[in-house]
Image (cartoon, rainbow, N blue to C red; front, side, top):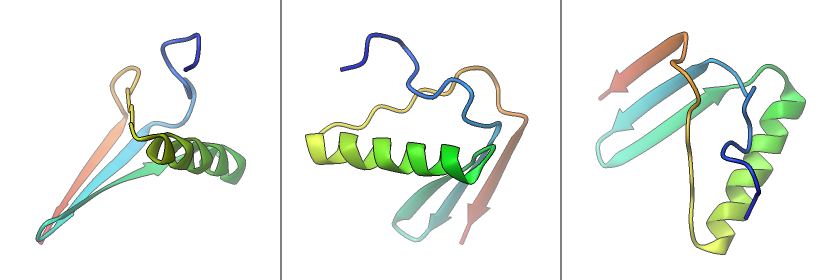
Length: 68
């Protein structure tokens, strides 16, 4: 467990939410490929540990919804 509330406080400001039938995907647009790799690695680590925690700090500048 980390000692701070946000694991990636300056990740990026866009999150796309895509729903296709029974599948839902959150797509984060990061500021760089390095930041995206860090996020992916951290999410995989959390999932392998049995829990996933996502907290978005502040209001994103863009939210896009996809429904099929």
